[in-house]
Length: 405
Image (cartoon, rainbow, N blue to C red; front, side, top):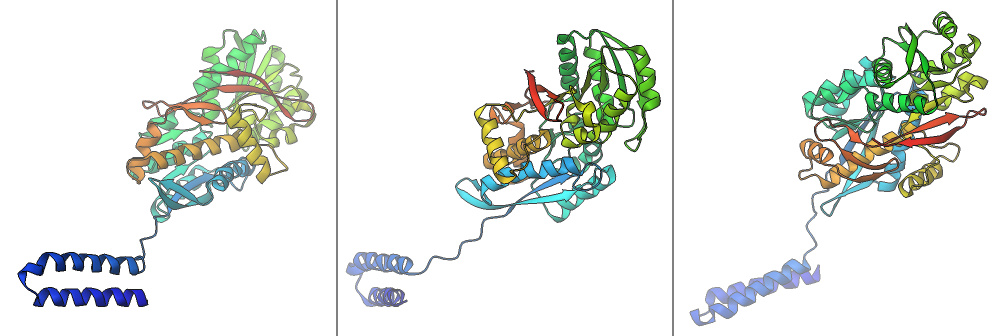
C-alpha cells in the first residue's frame, strides 16, 4: 500500500511540474510521467481477472431400471477421464473448470428426450455423451440436432443414429460392420447354417440381424421373432429353431434379454454355438445365463486383455478407481466418446457448440484404448476395429480375435 501511495504521489508531482514548466522540459517531464505511471501500475495489485468459463459436458445413461448395469459401467468409464483431467480442461493456455453432469435415461426413449432437453436448455452443456441404446439415440438425437448441440452416442450401433444430422456422432462401430464381423467369425469357425431369434421392436436387434444375413455366406434355416424387452419366455421360438439343428444360433438382442435367452436355448435343445452382438458384454448376461454361458461368443469394441499402451493405461486407471471390476465395452466406449469430446474442446477454433462439433468431425488419428480412431466426416461414424470375445464356464470373457475395417 505504501508503494502504491508513493507511486501515485510521484505521478501527481510530475504532472504538476509538467503543467508549470517550460516547453523545453516537455520531453523530460513526459518521460517522467510515463515512468511514474508504469511504477504505479507495477505497485498496484493485479486487477481481478474474469474467472474462466466453466465447461459442462452432459452424460445420458440408464442409471436405474433394467439396464442400470450398463449405465454403471458407462459412468465409471467417464469417471476415469474425469479423474485424469483433475477438474480442468486447458484451452489455448487457459484452464477452464469442467463439470460432468450425469443424467438417468432409465433406458426409456421418452425419458431420454426429457434428459436431453434439460441438459441442453437448463444445464447449457457444450456437448452430450450417450446414450448407449440405439432406440434412445434415435428418439433424442433430433433434439440435440435442432439445438445445435454435439452428441456422441456410445453404444448406439444402428446406422440411422448419425443420419439424424451433422451434430450427431458415435464412438462405436455400426451394425453393418458388427454384422459382418459376426458373419466372418462364423465362417472362420466353419458354420454353414444358422438360426436367428430377434426382438422386432428394437432397432439394434433388427439392424444387427439384417447385417448378419446380408454378410453370412451360409444358409439361414430359420428366423423367429418376439416383440419387446419385457418378454420372459422364449421357449416357443427356441423350440422351433432347435428342430432345424443349425450350426450356430445368432441372438442379436439387448443385454437385459440375453441371459434368459441363452439359458432357455440350451433347455430347448439348442446345443450349437451361440453368437451375440456387443450388448452381451456385461456381467448381467453371464449372471442370468448361469452355466449356459460357457462358450458364448460376441462381437465387442474392446478387450481388457489388450496389451496396447493406450488400452493398458485405460484399464490400469479404471482398476485404480474401481478395484473390484474390469472395464467392459460400455465403460470403454464411454471413455472414448468423452475423450473425443474433450479432444474437440481442446482443439476447437471457438469454444462453443459449433466449434466443438467441427472439431469432432475433424478428429484424425486419436489414440484410444481400442486403437487409433479417425472420424468419417461424411457419415460421422468412427473408423475403428472390433474384436471377438468368448465367455468361459466361469462367466469370464476372453479375447478370441480382432477384426479391422
